Length: 88
Image (tube, rainbow, N blue to C red; front, side, top):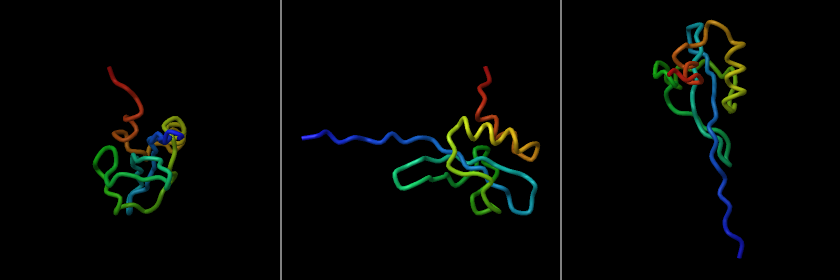
């Protein structure tokens, strides 16, 4: 009998544009066997998914998401992006 293998669930990031504003917010979710998920509110808590005008990117691992955010520029929410950087 072969033991059941468990797929580790990885964190995934999605960058969404807010309707009616030139601002972008990060959403955290999970990569699963069925695809990617994202939480209802952005990392900063200032944007609900229902306010989205579309995704800039989705289902990115942390390193890739951080690099793509750096290319996005000043319209990116600083509270959301600060999640990638540790403050001591």
